[in-house]
Length: 280
Ligand code: NAD
Ligand code: FES
Image (tube, rainbow, N blue to C red; front, side):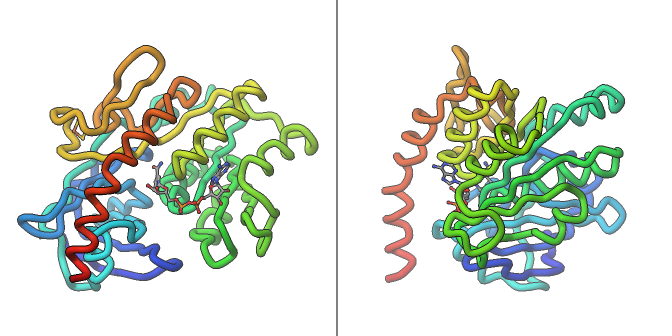
């Protein structure tokens, strides 16, 4: 069993948990994810790692209530425990393997959308610990939905945007990215975009136009998380890739987002039925 040491709500339906999982904490790298199971018969839920503390043996996860399992998960409190907490899974971010001196020559911008802000944090923190301060564009629908602003502000040059203009810069993340590059003299070699698929699609269309190499983190439906079931398959260029073992990060200019979004829609009906059953 994996004990929950802390559970708090960051924004409406968005929760943070610190979980005691020393083996995962000792091995994980930025970009990787874990799969949790609430109980014996529970669904396997893939979640990106938001932070880790190797000394304390803890992993921080951030999740949004979007289906039956995550609604049940949100009811857990400090002191409760997960039946399974498997990881670290997937490949670390590519910069983790790069020569630090070469990496320091690159200008990096991270685009963090909504709950996708959580997996951006360990990447930017890792870079900061290695002497690199990246720019981060953090986008949320409204002021109340902005998460991890303080934490990201401490390790990056942070630009906050809200769709409704209630806080920070007004408009979607793509507007700020375009403004920074075309009107405010910024130059970037690499963009890392993590958030809803529609956001990553539009960031990629923009960065293609601006000539910026772009990495995205894909979170399709996953079942086993080990490359066996095929649920998480994606078209990347002319290849079929499995997000769980080949990713979750890919060259965003090669990902077929339309196909990935269509596949995730297929599961919506199934999820809707399960939700109705829970409410009965
Ligand atoms: P959201 O809908 O609030 O969007 C976040 C930001 O993305 C917006 O503020 C906006 O700036 C930008 N955005 C949205 N649509 C856009 C568009 N068409 N063009 C340009 N920018 C756009 O985000 P949310 O409700 O937190 O998203 C939840 C989704 O994120 C879920 O589907 C979840 O599965 C996904 N998610 C992805 C990851 C990942 O690793 N990729 C991690 C966590 C969550
Ligand atoms: Fe089964 Fe990736 S989740 S192959």
